[in-house]
Every structure is written in structure tokens, then in C-alpha cells.
Length: 324
Length: 292
Image 1 (spheres, rainbow over the protein chains, first blue to last red):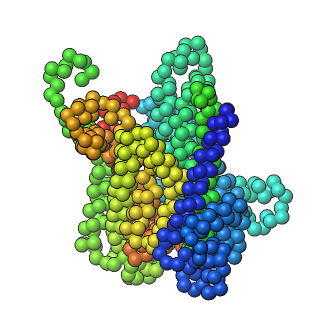
Image 2 (cartoon, rainbow over the protein chains, first blue to last red; image 1 turned 135 degrees about the horizontal axis):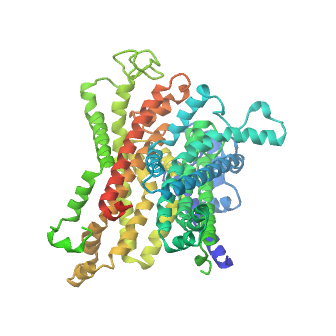
Image 3 (cartoon, rainbow over the protein chains, first blue to last red; image 1 turned 90 degrees about the vertical axis):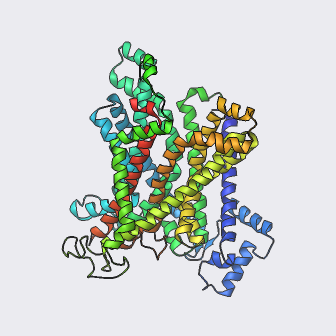
């Protein structure tokens, strides 16, 4: 991996983040009403001292460009403002919530890619077989079901009918202070339903995509060569073919990350998962703009990082790209 | 038609007619058309033979489906009729879905067409803007927009459009890059057609097939978006919608499964129908793909 590629990619990522900061700034100013009132989020109930201290902090009496500068340099030093509802700095609110979201999103991503690709590969072996039909139908259904509704249906199912998975929260209260391993298993137990709910939509898409991509690769000469030299079918499918069919899957995985975060927002709300999505929902109900903007900034940063990682893994998967 | 010698018997058919012929034979797509038509008819005309305001409390709360003949699907946590809710709620969902898809297509096609046609710095600038919008998590950004600019059906459609155009822009750009090198574009230029005419009258009509497919799928995505926003309580509180029904009854799901299940099924069948139609159009426009 060339260093210049990495540094170029990182610089571009930073530029995108600067764009998000400026957008946040503009949105608060474009919203109807006095920005100080908007930031306080009290809908007219804010005291005059409170508004005065907001004007002071954000420099709202200064020219717009100075305000923008104050805002950008604040964000650059990790200061995302103060939440008036939670009475805490936004950065510490987000810091407490980012772990659960990353855990949820990454688990869902892994489940959907591993299971989806596996289903797709199996289906590709017989393009007109039962498995292929199942993948197509499942993909169409998976695309059409609202993710929050899937979650609710699973809660109804697992709350009383088959009570084997917890349907709410991330930890059991009674296990606080238990040994680490017990707690980790408890979190994993709580993770099952939210992660699968989120994974279902994407699982279906990966299955369909990897089926199509495998069908294309399986028709190529080097697969015939691999079969002719007597490679076992499993090695032909999973080693020769899948490695070459992986690029479109990677592309989609990278592009999907933003959607995955949007989905996580709904899933966290349904399952009371204490992540950033739940925080966004709570702060939007209270019109706590500094927190909402902080979450928007942070979630976008996660997408930027995911995109950079996708580009890096591209180079790993496709040696032809490495020289560039 | 696999044999080239049969060409003498082959009467020329316009691509649109050929696509229509393929579409007509596609059973899943026809099922999609049928479901969607039924849903549209029910949501727009159902209120004429099934009267009742979806917001009115008409009966005891949480009446089970099938118990009281007047309220075949039961009532919600306030005692509101679920059939009335489903019939009225679809209108908002479909209207927002269609409007949002239209806004998405307008922004996406404009950006993609200009970027693909002019190339160079225009392409560079427009594509950087597109990438920027792809970085923002769509639902979160739509939530922010709706909260800042007060929720009405139009703001919601606008917000969904603003977050979902980048994919359309990329698709349009790719089509334009491909088509602008073709001979009939050179021919149009040779007879003195101006850029504006070439973009909108020569290239765009030929780029339409994949864009129509993508517009169909965008309607599905927009419906899911609207449902998600209303579920979170960010929809227009004065307009009944399927998402709102699910969101309002969410806290009582362990007491009553029906008030959330039926609206969810309604959303599912609508998006399912739309995506069957989208897949059918895709196959109809790409006859080669059907061999797989």
C-alpha cells in the first residue's frame, strides 16, 4: 500500500468532514428563528441568561464568518457544544453511546456478509435450482420489509412465545459487577435480536449480489481450468471463484455503511439499545440541536472511515489496483 | 431470433413496444401491478364505501380483530378503527413516496446529466458534492431536516428527496458517459444541435430505461423512509399514515399485536409490489439478462 494513496485518501476524508461541519453550521442558521433559541432547544422557554451565554459561546453577535471559524475550531478540538437538555458536553454524551452502535453495526455487517455470501454461493451452483429461487424471493421480501417493523415482530415473537432472547436493552441490571466474561456473554445474548433485525435487509441483498457475481465468474476460463486440473468443487467455489467475485460485494458493503447506520437508528429505538441512534431519537424529541448535530457529525465520520477502509480492502482484494 | 437468417421474417418493433411485450409476460411483475393497483384504489376510493375518520375514537381500546363486525381489524390503544386508519393512512404514504421519488429524480438527473455530459471541472465539482451527500447517513439527515423545518408532507418528501438523489446522479452520469460517445450524438452535433438540446432531447431519452427502473425502486425506498420517519414521530402529526400507526401503538405491542402488524403488512405489500414492478421493468429493458 503506497503511503501517498493513504495520505491522499485521509486528506479527502478530512475535507468531507469539514463539509459536514459547515453544513451543520448552515442548518442551524437556516432554521427559522433566533439561532440562540434554536440551540437552547427550549422552544421559547429559555431564560435570558441562558440565551446570553449561548450567544457568548458561539459568538453569535460577531460576523457570520467569525461564527463559522469559532464553530470549526471548536469541533477540531473535540468541542461539539453543550447539550442543554442532558446538561453535559455533547462529546461525552456521544463517547458513551458510540461503542454500542459500533458493536451493533459491525455485528450486523458481519452476519449479513457471511450468511449472505454463503447463500449466494450455494445458489450460484444451480442457477435455476430451489436455492436460487429462494434467494431471489428472500431478497425481494427483505428489501420490502420496514426494518423497525421486523424488530417489533421479533419482539412480539420472543417476548412471550419463545422467550429465549432478551428483547430490550444491552445488559441485564442484575449482572452489573459480574466477571467480565459473564457480562460479555450477556451483551452478546442481548445483541442477537437487534443484530439479526438489522442484518436481514442486507443479508438478502448480499445473497442476491453474490449469486449474480458468482454466476459471472463461474463462466470464465480459469474456473474451467481449475476444474479440469481436478480441484475439489469446494475449493473451486470458495477459493478460485469467490475471491474474484468479491469485488462487487466489497463495493456494496462500503456503500451500504451509511444505510446501515440509518437502519441502526431505527433498530436501536425499537430495542432500546443504548447507542447513538437512540441518542439521536431522544435529542430530536427534545429539540436538543447541539446533540443532534453532534450525532450527525459523528455518524458521518464513521461513514468516512468505513469508506477509507473499503478502499484499502479493495487494494487487498485486487492486486491490480496496488500500483496506483 | 437466435438464428441470423430469420431476420427476413422479423418485423421491426420499437424498443418501448418490445419492453412492454416482455413486461406483459412477466408474471411476478404483473402480480406487482395488481397489488399496487389494489392498494391505490383502496387508499383513494376506499373511504367512499367505508366511512369513518381514522382519528376518531369509535370503540373500546384494543378490540381484537374479527370480534366486532363493524371493526373487522379491531381497534388500537385509543379505540380508533384500524380499517379506517389503513385506508386513510395509505394516501399520505403513497403521496410522499411519489413526490420524494420525483424530487430525487429531478436533482439526480440534473446533477448526473451535467456531470456526465460536460466532464472536466464540472464533473469533478458535481461528483464531489454527490460524494459529500453520500457520506451523510440518510435517515439521520432527513430527521434533522424535518425537525428543523417543521414536519409537513411536503417537507418530508423534500427531505427524503434531498437525501436519496446521489445514487440517481451516479447512474445518470454513467449512462451519459456511455451514450455521449455514440454516433447519433455526433450526428446531432453535426447538424448543429446545441448542448442543451443534445443533453435533454438526444441523450436523456436514450438514458431513460435504467432511470425508469431506478425511479421505481426509489419510490419503494421513499415509502420505507416515510414510514421510518412517521414511526419515530417525525411525520405530520395531523395526517394519518401507516408509519404513524405503528409508532403510536408501539408501546403496547405486548398487549395487542394487531395495531402494529396490519400497517406493517400494508407497507410491506406496497414496497414489495413496487419492487416486483421494478424488477420486471429491469428485465424488460434488458432482454439479454433474462437468459440467466
